Image (cartoon, rainbow, N blue to C red; front, side):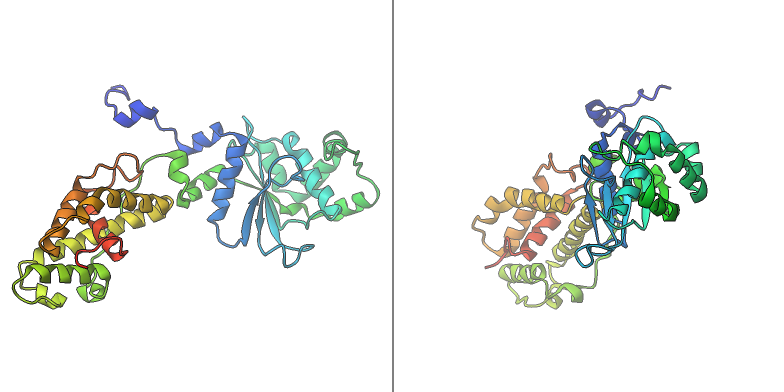
Length: 350
């Protein structure tokens, strides 16, 4: 059986999905730096992240500040993430110059020595370089041997930097154990928590996590519940002033369904928050608002009829451009109506 015996509309539109660990190998160097910055944005323990890769970066692609550099400009703590996007695993000859830059520019007090200096490459690190990164003594000796060929005239194009005199003393005292690597699959796996992961790699939204509907006592002071009580009262021959009056009335089923739909929409909001930018759910709400506002501004005999008509209108709205298109259901759209009531964007009464 061929893998294309059964195809989906998505496959026809965008082709076969590429596994993220393979997709990063197709990125441009700039995209790889951006991905690394996003990955660091969600890691704890850092004050801030700065991407400065390019000409004049002094051997620093992405800086992860451990404390605020403004508080101690000459001796702040930081980690360096050097991004290398080659079509093969990194070898020592690919990065001798990078070692030279960090040693020379810290010697010149351009910035403090980083706590850690990591190489991050989508093709990973070759065995020779990996072996050196595990042995600071061998690494130091190898850099010393490579300095004249790879560092002396490559650190800066304006002058030659021989490893002599004070720089040699500094080199000999330098802590070469700060150099290490990050395995690319770790970056890809941890990046899943970033709101740009799905836009970058695709794969679809995961299943939503169910939210248990809380006791009505928790919600009865929320505006959407207060509006429902007023809506029922406007239709009923009997007085309905509290949620307790709904229990044995004909409105009980609608009230129960309305609370269910409110929390289904909340499930959708939580799904968006955890996987995409929160603006996606805000845009979804705006689409529903645009679709129901004309109906909501019509005249109705009472608030109960208005609520049902607006809910029905919302369930018919076709969402075709929002990333939530494939996961949203009519109950979510109805629930957004009650979210809009809660936000004071629409009302059933008053």
